[in-house]
Amino acid sequence: MAGPGAKPAPDAQPRLRLDKWLWQARFFKTRALAADVIEGGHCRVNGNRTLKPGYGVGIGDVLTFAQANRIRLVKVVALGHRRGPATEAQLLYLDLDPQPAPEPLE
Image (cartoon, rainbow, N blue to C red):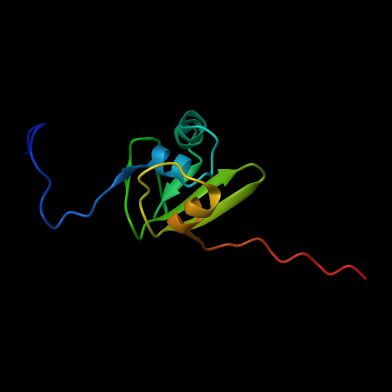
């Protein structure tokens, strides 16, 4: 078992806290709101429910969570370094369940 100062294994993929990633990807206005959704049992990582905001997510993970009146299904394609503008945040994920196109007006 590794101690607090131990380095990760060289083949270990980088991970980021789930609440921080959801905040950086701009799904929630604050990390506290993201943590509330996670702790409330409304978030799954690769199909497994997690109640820990500090759960580590990495590239390739699929997240399912409630946002407003919608269930979101997204795949993590990048880990952020900061909470940037929306255009930068959209590069962090692939929406696996996009909104249906609006119906044309007649």
